[in-house]
View 1 (cartoon, one colour):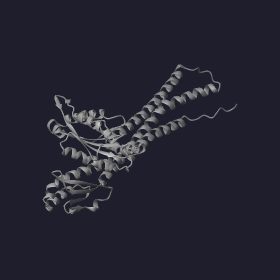
View 2 (tube, helix red, strand yellow):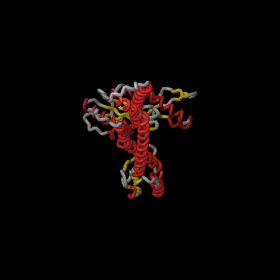
View 3 (spheres, rainbow, N blue to C red):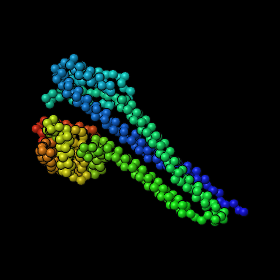
View 4 (cartoon, rainbow, N blue to C red):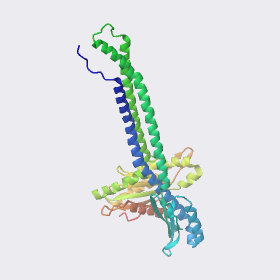
Length: 405
């Protein structure tokens, strides 16, 4: 009597499916974790550090204005000491413009154990520059927080994987392995010539159930992969777009501006960077509350976005500040109609509940000549300074760092 083909144990199917399921669950988690921890999280942390640095510089420059004007060393020392109480501040320097020398400085070099962020801000009194403050902060506290977040993410992902694998093993054994063993015994009986036991309806039902469970498992895995892809897209959306207005945020702006400058050079067409700051928004926030202020911001951003051309970009820089990139200007003067439309759009009344609110906007303009070397930071500074000049000149207007003719 010839031997039949060797039988494969159902356990081999169990471990193949368990291995495939484990890989299927781990791969999206690894990819998603790599994107979050290796790309999104460091950029968000860097932007948070830059924002914190600029906030501290702004506070410091305003606080030392009067005492620096009066040359009060003790007053400057008191303000600087208060700033140095923040555990991530490495050093502070106050420069007197009249003597072009250090008026006061303080440093704690032992705090410089991570990556340092440096910045400076002019000290103004009645619109006149009288000095400058410089600051260095360290990101070791943010780095420690990142490590804790990563350990929590890894432990959570591992726990989810173990629970999922255990559940798959139990379900496969109950719904697949046991029915396969029963069907295998029946098939072996037929293969050996034993036809005394005809196919019972119960066996047919088991085959139908097995098919149903396999299709159900396939759909469940597909839904899991789709959910992971959706979560990844949501993370990227959160990292690149402002939650309130839906406009690109600083992260996406920092990525797009160098590309826009490179495109300007390739096409030999000028580019304009606009820095927009709403006039009167603080009064709305203080008078009607932040909820009304948020709805006003959202409405103004929609009005401004509608005035731009295809290919232009509007981003929320923070608070009531926006940045716009005007592409493919055949002549610098081509920006004037767009600027006038933006002024008109910002001044349109917006109904928020029972309130009809109206604000305006001050716009600073910095032009980029495609023959120049691309320098995003320099453009930011020029546009920011031009915006402050527009504010001081009466608001609800634009000012260009260089002539538009």
